[in-house]
Image (spheres, rainbow, N blue to C red):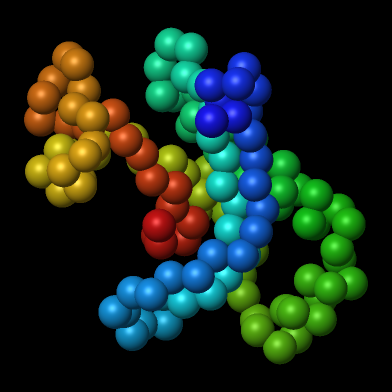
Length: 124
């Protein structure tokens, strides 16, 4: 509704509660989510540009402003820093056969979809 009201972009940060029948370490029932809605002027790649910008800046600002907290986390949960250009990427034009039924097909090739996912260290 906000987009119809001529707001070009709307960002929401808030609690998310899911009642899924998933019992893995990768599925949380409760978390804080970032959701955004935006008008697409020409192509859905505009959304990918915003997602890329948000993630890159979020990681950069965390590294700049939260070094003390990050050091404490590293002591409790050791990890290898992300490598530039390899561990954060956006994959688009998925094969339509593996996407949900409501995913838009590519206009130039009906075997692929106008959709994307963000991967960090191989996880969506």
